[in-house]
Structure formats: structure tokens, C-alpha cells
Length: 335
Image 1 (spheres, helix red, strand yellow):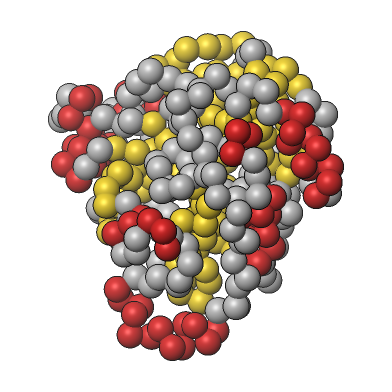
Image 2 (cartoon, one colour):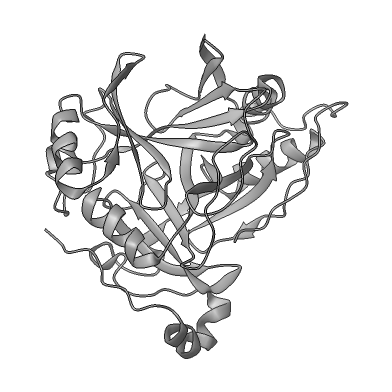
């Protein structure tokens, strides 16, 4: 799995070295979770949810396991869900110190379509709820990961139109990521002072933070829960959340800013499809800041995204051994 780093507080942090616009966070980049078997994961996210498999690769820190990336047609930042599949792992427990719900945006008139689709596919879903002007359909992945579909007036955003899901109802990306935290204060400080979010709503210990124009792909929600159980990592839990920034210069500026705050932050890491840094906010959630470029077409054309196993350069020499040990996958059926 990706590297993790110790938690440090923000008390006594130094004055920030960069103005906010030089290290601007533009919104959400991706979410990475731990899942059960890779084929089960592919069948659910590629077939039932209709997301495009935009990259088939391996875990940077464990090439014995796949790393699966899903998104819209090109894998735009903010549409990307990624998974570390481990067939012999153990179940996690959602709780404080974690992203506990991944909220996915769908068009305003699409709830009925998805209710029918989930019923026909045997998806574990709850009744439709109403929240903040949206219809919400909570459901769970095959490993118990908590997700929801949320109607969102964002017709300008495009989903993947090459799956079995009807294009007019396709998932448009992440509406928001929902964090459960023991205390809002230190997390709010990180979101607003280090990452450039602003608080836009608060009700019943539920806080909304947005960046830029706000809305889809630009929202974090935090539920303050001082008495809930701590989260436990494992199948069906989110490993980390990544925020997007425009280029390596803004990533470096963001790293300097985070380091100046007193938090322990990783060096800049080359993840082939983006460069990124990692740090933990004081409540325990692992955050990543990742560049938009070079993107997923850096090593294969748009038409072939996700169709062949791609390996980080340091593992290419071991391709034969890696391919022999990885499970053979049946890729999602195209439209």
C-alpha cells in the first residue's frame, strides 16, 4: 500500500512560506480504497456502476497486488476511484479518522434508473434519502465500502459513455468525500489554511467545505463524531484521498506550506500518471496532493486505456514473474 506518515499537530506552526494561489488545490483528484478480489471489484465498478477502467497496473509498494483505476472516459481528476485488491485480506471498520462515504454525482432525473439497476443486480442499497437539495441513494460495494449516489445539477460534466450504463444516467465523478472526525477544529485548520477550502455550511455537526466554485469534485464534508468508534483499515475502507493541483511547481509550493505548518509530509513521489505528496491530518486521515499531468494517456492511447497491464518502470524487468503471480482478469464488456 502507499506509504504512511506519523501524525503531528499544528500547534506552534511557522508562518506559511507561499501565498495560497501558488500552491492552489483545485478540488478532488482521486479516492483509493482497499478491496476484496480484483475480479469482484472489476465486475462491480466496471460492469454495474459503469465506470471506465482507465488503468490496469500494480501497487507501487507491493507489485504482487493489482492497482485498479476507474473514472470517466479519460480518467479526469475528480472522477477517479482506485483500489488495492487483496483477496485474502480482512474486513475493515468505517469510523473516525477515515473517509467513510464516497458520494458520486448523477444527473437530477437518474435515481429511479439506479434503483432499478441495483435491484436487478442485487446491490446492497438503502432507501432514497433527501439531503441538501439532493436525492441520495446509499449503497455498499461487494466488500462493504460505503458509497452513495447523489443527484446533482451538473449537466456540463461528462461520464463514461462506453459501458452498459445508459450515458444519460452515467456517474459524473465524485460529488464529495465524507470524513468522520473526532474533532472538527484541527481538520478544519488543515482544509482551510493549508489546502484552500472554505466552510460553506454547518448543521447538526455536519460541515461542508468547498474549493473554487464548489460543487461536484470540489467538496469535502466532515461529520464531527467525538464518541464514535475509531476506523480500522481493511477491506471496504478508504486508504487515502487525493486533492488535485495543476503542476509540479504548485505541488512543491503545497509541500513547503504543509511542512511549514509542522505536519510530517513525504518527499515528492513519481506515481507515473501524476506526482504527489502524502501527509496525515491530525485526526488520522491520510491525504495526498497530486498533479493533474501527465495523466493516464502517458503510456497508452485513449482508445486502449485499461486494456493492458502497465508496470512502473522499476518493475518492468520483473514483468514475467509479476504476470505469472497476478490473477488473470476478465475485463468489463464494452458497449
